[in-house]
Amino acid sequence: MKGELEKLEQEAMAALRGVRDAQELRRIRAQYVGRKGAVTRLLRKISTLPAAERPQAGKLANDVKIRLETVFKSALKRIEQERERPQAGLDVTLPGRPFERGTFHPITLTLEAISDIFLRLGFAIAEGPDVELDYYNFEALNIPRHHPARDMHDTFYISDNVVLRTHTSPIQIRVMEKQSPPVRIIAPGKVYRVDYDISHTPMFHQVEGLMVDRQISFGDLKGILTTLMHQLFDEKTRLRFRPSFFPFTEPSAEVDIECVMCRGKGCRVCAHTGWLEIVGAGMVHPAVFEMVGYDTDRYTGFAFGLGIERIAMLKYGIDDIRRFYENDIRFLRQF
Ligand code: DAH
Image (cartoon, rainbow, N blue to C red; front, side):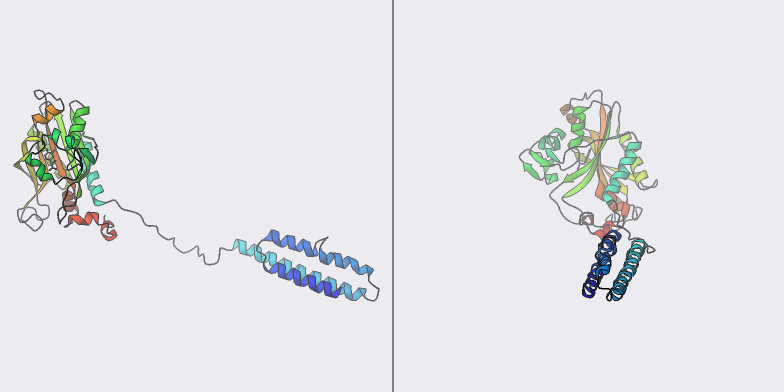
């Protein structure tokens, strides 16, 4: 009897040591000291022992039972306290770990600023494909095959008549094919040219503009571009229109803004001229209207193409265009 009791006590203690939850603990308790438990059963057997042995055995069994009950109780207490206490190593008074938030790319910010201005002026936003047919990129814009103007473009060819668009001007054609005048759209997007140095990347962004209606004049073009630059930079920014050539406009102009870095005094950014070229523009060439079936006696229009990287560089004081596309997180975090 003595040996059996000792063995049961040891067993019960060992089982208790690993216990982590209260349900498991109660199960073990019932197994040993419950009404049908092993220790209880031994206690009942005492009456069958010879009378001389009963007191000693009774005392022994009772002691075991009491010791086990005590250990069960303290184990239950420990488990309950553990459940209430925050997990070890978790200090709820510490400030939380901040998670990193992204920022918008400066080109995205610039595109959005420009789009906002034009939306307020009543322009709609149009889109076209980056992989473009030669027809839309050149042909319909009055740049036939073997025209010297094609040399200006350093085109990525996909196949004989499919290219990566070299400018956003093909979107003009796509819009006019679908819609009759009046037209008032801008078309922001990526464009591609075989070029890479301090002021050129093989992919860059333009915003195309097109306005067609009765009696649209060069004055409207000047008014819209002046408003754009005044809102993008400030009201003091002066514009300069120089005669130029594009096959799809006549007359054509290149538009400069007064250098926003030196206010026209001349500095490194403007190559000491005081001016920065940022827009190609002009009155839509009648040959282009004919390609899309617009009546050239009724309608006139202006168009322009804006270089976005150039504007973002001026807006944020960035001196190398390649910064935009190196994905240097230290650069990108600043916007
Ligand atoms: N597409 C021309 C370029 O990328 C820019 C341009 C010039 C667009 C005159 C126009 C325009 O719409 O009228 O060089």
